Length: 397
Image (cartoon, rainbow, N blue to C red; front, top):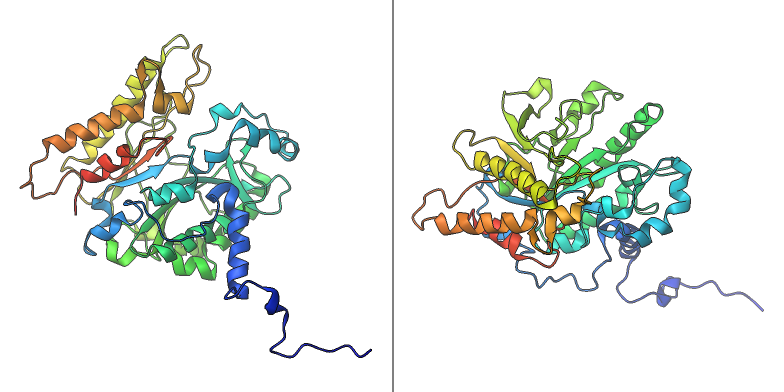
């Protein structure tokens, strides 16, 4: 019997879902691969959250450094539960690194997709080679967060989200979570390639972002580069867009520090003002309440500085996250952020602070509220969307 070759009208596409071309199927595959970090793909791209397009209310002329940007600290840890840690145990063991219990590593509990839909616009993500050294994936300290969701996969998921939300801007903080000198050159080349691909060139703003307006940045991402590229050619490193925060100059556990964030060839003297005081200096016998009080005092002082007229064109970046190890009472990120029975966490105190700021604003205030800059929260949107709503209401269009 003669075998018939299908004509152009009788191809294997006849078995596909109608209107699903190869590009769509390829994107669907990437989104599925990204889902352990980004979250499951939505079947309906239309969002019902009023915060999914909150930047659309602001005029194009708005300077990004004048805006209040809610963010998520260690955003990729949302799915790092005891069950996830157990599922990754065998592959993570290849690194031969000690890994603490999941409760010390999980800082969020809703997916990156859900965070985006509910207003979050800044993401703290940590990368390193996977356990086999083949590609870049996401980590928190020594903990592998997924062996399958690569940095490139997750970047494509963000690109896809921006396609559906062209009025928005995403701040992407990327930091290397490792210090293996033997692999530094390979890691730097891989992250550089990911951030200079054809897709990245389309979706990352090709400037530092310090002087950019919202109109110039809509539909794009701004890189907050917390890694060096000293193993690459200097011209390549300086050509990478975004704002550079060298880990060599980042003050560990610093409550109030500033740093230049531009290459030497472009440095105009402006600085970024940062607070990343994650571990209050308390005794091992201290209580949760005392740790929360000190952490809140540090971030409140930073917010007060950010809203002052001292440096109106500077970038302010504060971390509301916290934890304290080696204490008699477990000061995990969850307990620090959300508290427990009888103790309000940092998020609850910040919500009250933001409410107070709103009540103090006058309708005729020409500044239309107060500038706080980028603020990174732990366990954001975890049953309390009002925290972000209050934060965004302080600086109106």
